[in-house]
Image (cartoon, rainbow, N blue to C red):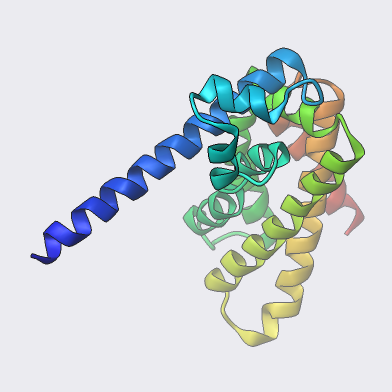
Length: 197
């Protein structure tokens, strides 16, 4: 009997996730095609096959659609760091994890998203919040590799410095509209960081 009562809930949740994903993909495609400012909530809802009222069940604003694309980033960062061997210096470990994640930034879609996120002051400010979440994820993962309390402050410095280097890397990559791989900027920024330490 329990399986029967939980099965519909699982189906509903799956349907909800699929609808949310469809709206996010539709919104992003419209932003890329028409520009962020020119795309209305009504246009996103209509293209997604839902009402404007239903849109607000899934997202509070069209900005939330862009933020939805970044939601999994802290978890991805954490997983990438935990997948690295602790037989290396913490800064090298984070750099290597970031280099593996950089592959996701090679698509035209990633370049288009970056361009949209830079298009307004409000979006630029919202975009910066992801780096704070990344910093927290880096510190948590490093603390799992090296759980000693005496190392916590030093690992926090590594998290802050490495996410700062990543932020500069993403900015430089975006400034060049993705003409060079993000990994090349990551290598350059981490090399500069190590030189100055």
